[in-house]
Each structure stands twice: as C-alpha cells, then as structure tokens.
Length: 386
Length: 205
Image (tube, chains in turn red, brown):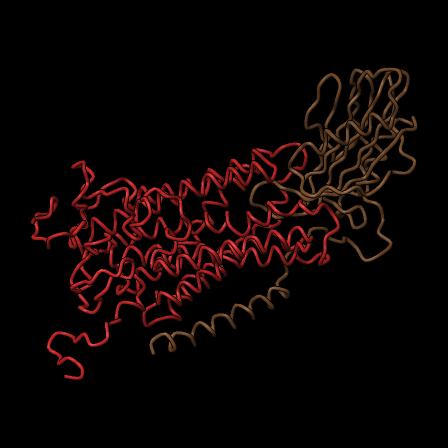
C-alpha cells in the first residue's frame, strides 16, 4: 500500500501517512493532505474549531487539554462571581493574571523552554510585561488628554487609541520573541514561535490591563455600584484582551519560525504562512478591534466586537499551525516515542504523524518524548531482565 | 529529573513577578485626579475681556475662554474645554414642553438620555444638586458618577451633572460631563464654578 499523496510505502490499515500526514481514507482527492477535518495538533478536532486551548496550548496531550479547559472555565466563573461581589480591584488583578499564569503552567508542563528557562521566560513573559507596563504608563496621560466623554471620540482619540497605540503595542510585543529568534537557533519549530509570541503577548496584556485599571485598583476594595456593572469589563480583561494579544503575536511569530524550518519553504501553502501577510494580519488584528471598540462604545458591543476578532484570529493561528505541521512535516527521529499520547497506537519512533489518529508528533509535550515503555529496549540494547 | 531542574527557574520567575507587582506601587502612575495645590487655592483667573455670546431658539448664553463651541444647532449648544485628563463638556438645550411638564420630569428624561449613552460603566446617583437653577429660574438637578469606557484605554472616573428648569412652555436642560473630581479639580478649571457661570449667564427668550 502506498500513500495517496507522497507515494511512500505504508503499513496496512493506517488511516494517515506517517511521513506526510495525508489522510488515506478521505473520499475526495483534494482533502487527502489538507485534511481540514482533522487538526494536526489534535486530530479529534476540526481544523476550524475555534478552541482557545488546543490552539494556543498545542503541546498539551488530551488529558491536560481537558484539565486546562476546566481550569480556564473555573477561573472565568470565579472572576464573574468576584465581580458580582463588587470586589472590583481583586477581580481586575486576578483577571489580568489568569491566562499568563495558565501559560506559565503550560511552559512548565510541556517543557517548552528546553535547557534555557531563564532566557526563554525572560525574553517572552518578562520582556513583554515590562514593555506593556512601560508603554501604558507613558501613554496614560496622552490618552486622557485626547478623551472627550459623552460626546463620542474625537478623530485624534480614534487615531491614537484605535491605530497608533495598537500598532506600537504589537511591535513591542514582538521584541522578546525576535531576540530569541535571532539568538537561539535551537528553537526551530513553528510551535516554538507560537508559544513564544503568545507568552510575550500575555505578559504585555497583563501589565497593560493593570496599568490602565490602576485608578480602580487603588480605590476602595469593595465597590458600591451595580453588582453586574463590572462583569463584562472583567471578562474582557481576563479573556479577550490577552487572547487577542496572544493570537496576533503568536501568529506573527509562528510565521517567522516557519521560515527557519529545515524543510523547503516552497512546500507551504496559503497566504497566512507568509510572514508579510502574517504581520499585516497581526497589525490589523490589533487595529480593527481597537477602532471598533472606540467608535462603538459600551461594554456589550465592545466585548462582542473584540470577541469576534479573537475568534477570527484564533482560526487563522490554527490554520497556520495546521499547515505548518503538515507541510513542513518531519519525524522526531528520537527513536524514543513508542506510543501515541492521543490514541496509544504503537509507533516505530521515526514517524512524523501517528498513522492511526494523524496527530503531528511534534505537537506532543516534550516531557513525553523520552518516555519509553517498560521492557522495551533501545536499538542495540539488551532487553531488561534478559 | 529534567522537570525538577526547570522548577527552580520558574520559582525564581514567580518571585520576580511578585516583587515586581509589589514594586508597582512605587511607580509614579499618574493620578486620575491631580490635586493642584495643597490648600487655599486661588480661583483660576478667567479672561473676561472677550465674552462670547450665543443665541439659540430658547435662550442666549455667554461664555469665556478657555471654553469653545464644539457643536451648535437651533436648540442646543455644546461647549468644550480641554484639560490634562480629557475634555470637559457642557451641553445646554432648550425645548418646548407641555404645560404640565415639571423640572423634575424634564430632569429625569434628560438623565435617562445621558446614561443611555453606553460609554459609561457603573453609573451611580450622587444625589440632588441643591439650589439648582438655570438663568435664575429654579429647577432640579442631579449629580452622577460613572467610569469611562472608550476602547482599550485608562479607566477613569467621570462626573456628570444634570439640571433642568421649566418656565411657561419652555424647558432648558444643562448637562456637564467632566473627568475632573469636583473635590480636587484641574489647575486650569474649577468645574463647578465654570458651570455656575455659564448657567447664570443664560437668558431665557
């Protein structure tokens, strides 16, 4: 049996080619390798499923994905309860830190920083946080000086808050990851780019949200107004703003890291994998929601507008990762992975994809890569107990 | 174990983040409502050499610098003045009302229309404005506090004051929206004095 896409010899019964990832049972020829119904980093989901966790946390196995989804849900519900209890300062600070803390946990759990944790965490979270705080402090008075309340925004306010500051912010979020790109060549995977970009975006958004809400944070601990007034602003700080920053920065960095991949560049398809297009999308992803938010006004429309932008950006990130993992497929070549963490299918150790479920094996947690089944010898070793 | 070795840097990072969070208190984040002077502040000098007079269908008013007209139509005028914390605006509107309309009725409908503008979060009633009058016609007034919501920007308090007066079949409403705390105003503008001046300059027609 030969692969319908790359022509390599396959074992009987496999649903996917272990080297190019092409789906062998697809009914239509054009879907053989594109396989849009089976997201490369988590084949149990459609490529266009707007999932936060499996898109921005692609290294997690199915068990951890489940845990993280619940953790995120519980975190958001807890924040809503805190807001309804009028504990506005506490709610805002916790909301700003929710996703960054979860992402730190992800870095640790999936061991994304290799042997250089200080460098990687410093260049992503810390640099992003410092630049986010600095920009917010420097622009605080400038924004207020252009604001007019109750009359609709002035043109100068729209340009400043809707266009200039989002663009400057996006460029600052890229500083740390670009330093990593230029100085640490061992990180050469599209998933590394996504993780570093998302981490820098989350660090940036956390300090920006805290700085912009400083007046609220330093007021009384319990507010006296309506119980429901701060729910939507808190959800925006907890989910929408950090996801937007993580998605735009992750998208640009994933496209940047895709250029470093050892596979031939001409194999990648789709405009979203082009670095210039990704930069443009990232900048528009910052500017369009910001302009709309300024012009629309009001927490409900604001949240809906930002939420729509986040969903579109997450789908673009997902598409880029999917294409990157498939078009630049390469085997792990560790010879160590002997069981697919998704479906527990037995592997040979030199595949790029699980032939049973189609999972791109680069998307498995690094901590699981060295795992070996008991009593399974490495090549050239004697079986234990023999 | 590899993971145990990575736990220490993570711990250091969390310690660093905690210290940075504590240190945030020392960063001179601009106050939303600066205090111009410690005590006994003189009122800001107003240039009264060049009064500006505006005529609308139901009233005439006089204003001075630093105020300027933001917009105007037959029934209403919106004045605006810039401060460090954003623009302060005053909107004066005249309208024909039914004979049974009271100042309180007109006040309530005006407050509702102001708060329907959804760019405010958590509006709270700060109570009535005592001695509210427009053009020396007694009326009703209400003070409101809220927070600004204009995109991804600093969240600061907003102070809204609404007054309404009715004489015969004419009603005039006054809406002032300011980022300046009346208790610690901007060095260049004392909002309540400015509002009083404009309201008292109104001549009913």
